[in-house]
Image (tube, rainbow, N blue to C red; front, side, top):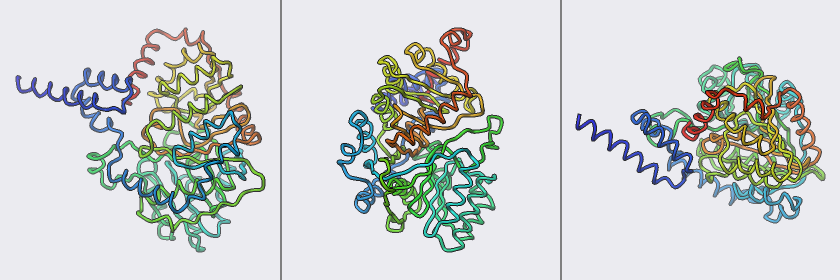
Length: 476
């Protein structure tokens, strides 16, 4: 009994000291881990060992630095001019664009155009048509790639392209696309000449357990065709019915088709992941930057566990701080940190019309509960909350003042902030922003508005549940 007691004390003390030594932990995260260790010390230490350290490993961090050193040395002209923010962006929005520059070094580049895809069918048709028309290369990277109608059509288009001599590189996340990676379709792509890679593979699961975390994932969705077309948005290579979680369907996504110099920046994000996974150099990736007339300025950005911690919430906070009249955000997963939460409330308090759109029914019960713990504070500040009823709203969108728009893969939750590789495009253009804003209005038309009265009417046990989940949110 004495030995067991000593072991218990030493175990809890060791992990407590480790948590106290973590300078990168926020006070809420540190408190959440203390709660877990006190309530379930043995299970808590195992959970911390597996999920407590946001570290992808020294080897991967070193390779990431080498990759971006090569990109900055060899592809600087595609990253834009340092004076671009002042020259291309309206003064009031320059701080947000300048912050975005600080993440990867991508500056705004002018001469871009974008087309908002009407729905999933249009996205699939246009994407397949663009791949079928490719003459030089096709690069795709998906978090989730299923062997359903959409996933198979994209795979078959890549097979056709590879057979006619187009260089095709396809990359999928080791967890999100694990079924496809182990399927006959993946093998068919390889046999046809499509170059394949797995992001964050589980091939050496023991090393992953010992040196990193199994839930660090590549959540990006990138398609680049001939260096002249790129798709950016929330859609994976999967049907909206999303068979693995069909009871939540349809999954409602958004996708934009871009042309112009911003394509090269998205190409570089793809290249960074490809080089990381394969060890190849940048010289194998073709880069072009052809402006489309007098198109709008845009810049790509990629975040992840190898980038500066806090980059995503700080970017969103910078954008929210620039809003003068309207701010509309849609996200399926809303678990903000204190910085982001305070920015939203501050914007509403200073008179900005802040509208937030979430799915009414979420595929993550943890996120659903944690999200609702913030409703009261947001509503008290004057924010407007809509809960989408037409399936799982998966679109990640932000529009500001009818002029600024951001689309991509980033959610407003701690997983996107700290654990996932994400990609987004930030742009200044009234036409594109208006198109995305109209899509947001369509989401609102299919939603119920949450009121302060309805939130106050929640049963006491439900409010306790929401707040308990939110308290341990940093652990989850």
